[in-house]
Image (tube, rainbow, N blue to C red; front, side, top):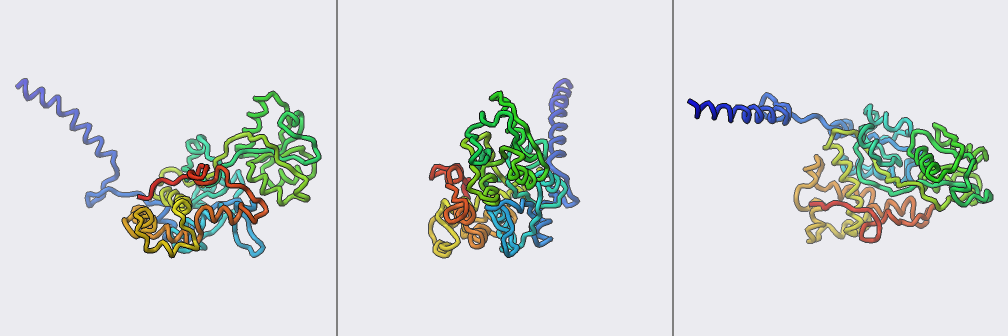
Amino acid sequence: MRKWGFLILFTLPLLLSLAGCSGQSGQTSATGGTAQAKSRLDTVKSRGTLICGVSGELPGFSFVDKDGKYKGLDVEVCRAIASAIFDNPDAVEFRNLNAKERFTALQTGEIDVLSRNTSWTISRDTSVGLEFAPVVFYDGQGIMVKKDSNIKTLADLKDKAICTQTGTTNEQNLADQMRKRGITYKPVVFEDINTAYATYAEGRCQAVTSDRSQLLSRKTTLPQPQNHVILNDVLSKEPLAPAVTNGDSRWHDVVKWSIYALINAEELGINSKNLASFENSNDPDIKRFLGKEGNLGEGLGLTNDFAIRIVRHVGNYGEVYNRYLGPGTPFNLPRGQNNLWNKGGLLYSPPFR
């Protein structure tokens, strides 16, 4: 009797524990399977278009050209995702959002993905409820001043007025850096970035601060751009990345691997012009990337040729970068950290296998 009593006492907690674990694994359907929550991917597919939040006012990243078409690096990320899903880069509806609106628009479901020069930080990744995709542009915060101001360093900005935008990392970064150095200054903060730059251009601020890429972009829109310079001081790390809402891994995977496809295509030497020459390649890495071997696309809920669709319609990351920021553009911005890992940069895609 003691033996059986001991066995019951020993096994009962184990059975209860197993029952508890099985109850947390998912909601069981009437057929005995596990019910899967509907993903944003299903919503986007049934709608037939991707809704993408962008700035719409930042040359090189997201802007509207003279023909009324959206262009820029951030825009091409949206077009790459649409290409992967629909084989149509134009199946995108763009929504212009300012810094204050962008997170609310994502949280409320107004947009499917945010592709708008947004810095990846721990607080945004946790308390704001965002899930970041891979970094598409490594940046840092800078300060722009007028060339004839004789301002050369942060120390020269003592007691000067500095314009910036609220709701961004720039406001806090500026305060942190000036406090570290014991430099007093006058922050002039605006909700609208256009007002911030207009106030600076009018001379009511002696400087304006933002991501260096934005300063470079906005400089081209100022009267007499040659009269403005960006200081050498870099105030912060600003990894700019698209974002989706937390809790939807299927949708996050589609956005994430669409961006990795842009990066990996460049590493493999595949671009929009030579894509056809790789169709019959025997290289296993290329065959898997192009969907000729394996079922990588199906694992994402896409067709196996999703990477081909992206390269055909958008190109690889290098093509996109050169199209809007590289040689021949008003920016002529060296790749630097935004080069591939094997060329001295930070861009890196996990394996397609």
